Amino acid sequence: MTRGDTTSHDSPDDTEGHHLVTEPPRSQFLSLHLIETLAAVLPVRDENAQPKSLVFGGVERHMITSQARRRAERVHARNRANAGLGQLKGRSMGVRTREWALLAGRELESAHGWDRDRAVVTARTVMEASGLKFGDPKKKTVADLTKVLIFAPADAGVRIADHIVDRAADVEEWRDAYLEAQARAEAAKKTRRGTRTKGATAPDAAETAVEAAPAADLPPLPKATRDAVLLALAPRDAVDIALYGRFLAEIPDSPNVDGAVQTGHAFTVHEAEQIEDFYAAADDAKLDRRRNALDFLDAADDAGAGMTGYQSLISGTFYRHAVLDRTQLRINLRVAGMDEAEAEEAASEAEKEFVNSFVEAFPEAKKNSTASTGSLPALVLAFEGERPYNYASAFQKPVDERALSAGGEGPAGPAAVRRLLRHHTFVSRRRSDLRTTRVLTYDPEIDLLLGESGVPESLVVERIEDLTP
Image (cartoon, rainbow, N blue to C red; front, top):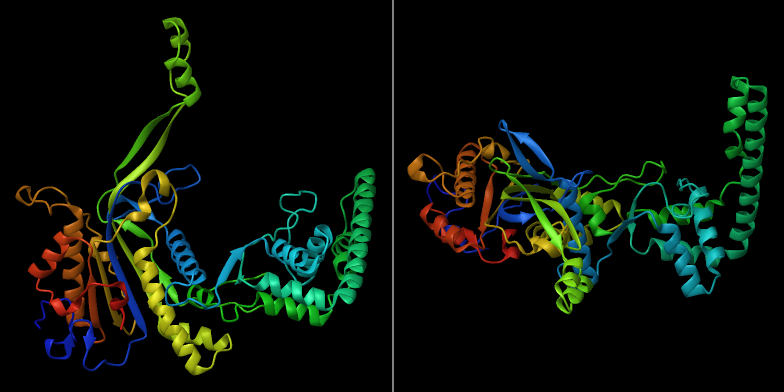
């Protein structure tokens, strides 16, 4: 193949579609790039319910944040695995929630017959003494929720509950002593506050130290129970934690995980255009009365919409990018306790599921009113290298959608595909590590464009699973 093609190190002689006669050793990084066009959607919004944006190349662009993308991909993979679908079916997956005490309490209640209050209070106290902070106990809505989201294996609540049941007598004896000491400390704190208010004097250093001291007087959680909680919350063999990583600062000796997936913010390849969509919602009961009114005065009373308002919607062609660090993924799986062979098998499955999620998953905001989750990419470009490659610079100059005859580039979708392929071709001439390029399209017009651009048919795959060796 020529240097003008979209890869620099596969040749027609050793490539048969997506089956290679001899597969070279895989590189550390798998880079994924995607072009997709969305119309009248709102995948992610800010605190004011407005579309998120960034300024790039001197103009404002619509943005879909990496956080929204990562969650959509992670949940997509987890749901498939839990449903017995995809490469990760049967594998342990994670759940990110503040409700671990409630989940453990529910397990104690449903599987072991504990009273609900007893179950939740015990689980919450055990987890709090392990180092986790919970919400204000005076506010029922947050009292049993951790202050931060904790990403842990899905069976963490079950494991904590099982340990509590196995050592119920010891744990409940400790729990009662802990809660009693906690109540005494809180009462003493209130007394000191009241005395200080009457005396109207600022606390000195000694008083400040005493204020912080009661926590040290609480009976420590038995080591076996604390170890059980930390093991339950540890990443263990949850594959999505190995992929996306986690950070839990509240418990210093609980292992954190450096994620193997890097995700860029998606942005439009052209200047942003936003519409404020006015909507009028009908009141069915009012319309029924109007329809059955006996005279025009009754009908007039029921005129008008039931509710009106505005919603912001965006349209555009987006560039998306993500990278998988294969080495980091295998390290994470080995640290989780897998042997080399099992880690290799799990990593291979996780890679295929990651690629599937990158292509298939989509943030679900307003999915019913905009059908945004049904979009398919115009182009997916996948290749390997010894470092990550981000092609955002290909779109620093906004795409000019005016007709070619008017000096523009035409519609943004095909224009973005042409730019991305041209950019990759140019880079691959100068980087000897780029190889195993593959492209996938769901757009017949783009398929024709690939042929016109000189992309060999052997590199154009028809299934997502063929994007990665």
